[in-house]
Image 1 (tube, rainbow over the protein chains, first blue to last red):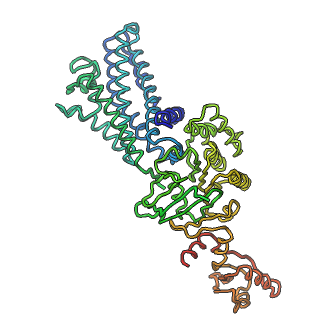
Image 2 (tube, rainbow over the protein chains, first blue to last red; image 1 turned 90 degrees about the horizontal axis):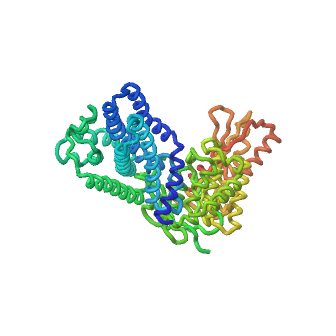
Image 3 (cartoon, rainbow over the protein chains, first blue to last red; image 1 turned 30 degrees about the vertical axis):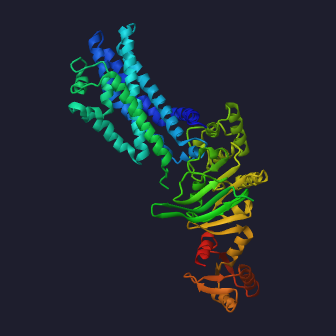
Length: 262
Length: 308
């Protein structure tokens, strides 16, 4: 089997399997929190479209970009190799005619598809509940797809990075938490080029907001030091991060012996 | 005959722990049993043979091809692992069919093969139940089904009979014997001699990471028979019983238990000793309450062989 065809089969197996796990159910429910917030905001801010647009931006920036995609990528990404070792199921995959990189690529594709689906669902529901009055406006749809694109790029980059961590380390979650909610948050307040050593910098560079462009307090805090990278460069950087960490994960996963605790 | 699985000076260690030490082995078509107590190195050998581990020293190959990072090789190899580990949220059918996807079979054939494999292990009726809800025996059988569903030429089974009820064991033994008639190669491990005996006469004894002996079962039996056996007899009058065995050339040593009712006899000839015990009961009227053999297990035999 070629890596491509094997990865396709691995994708099919884990896409089905991934949908059934308790983890997916939990994260899908978590993704509905902004929907509930949107409903509440809509009830209390009835007729104040400016305020609702601000809430919409807050939900996107604070919940999805700074929390949801990171936590999703952390748990799914680190599990690509680690869950097979911990659950002692890796034997079922590596004693098949499947090249090891295909296992990484197939699981990566399956899990990012699941995460993308959960994110898209939560984002679409909350976004259109808050902007229901403008649903016929093409600019609103353009903004929605831009947000979605940014989140998908974020999921890909973070998942690739965490997959790498999960392959290198046995307890990758803790370091992943430090990276996702420590480094990625703190570095945004550093001036100059230091910000470029984070994934979130490139994601924020793709958003239509700039410092002082409006939004709530959360958005203002997240953007106040942003020195954006040009959009094309930001996309290339995110694709590069994804490709580099995926390639590293494949190489390591192939070379490494995966020993379970026993 | 040419070797199907061959190991040359194979060694594997986990940190400071030695898993396998300088093992050279040739396994031919037919059924071969790896016999050894828990922790002997059987699973390590199987993990090396199935490419899960990389040898530290030496080589292991199937049909002359090294097994580490050789995925194409596994088109013709089936492996049933020992741990009770599964993808729990799938049905038995989905488990077997899902793993069959990795061989590139057409979708229809995948379904047919999965159905057939599950039918062979008597899980056809339960194929749509989640693996999570299977009993231990069913889980063992579905694990076996995934190992044979793609009709492999080489089948490697790590403790395949553990967790099965006697009927399940009998069926699986019959099935494995059938593989031999089809010209396939089966390597299986067990720490229970009668299980190995029921399947094959070709045995490799493994202990502390080393191959102690290779041969047929009668040879192994002979080794075991040469091992001094401990027989513990609880009776109403152990001293009178002991007096009957004093001077008996088959008796090497006798000790009395702390309870004052037990006599422990060390002998090289168990049959002779049991005949003597029967005579003691019949002729001297000594009441025997219990006879047991405290060291009648494989571990004791292996320790004896190692110390020899």
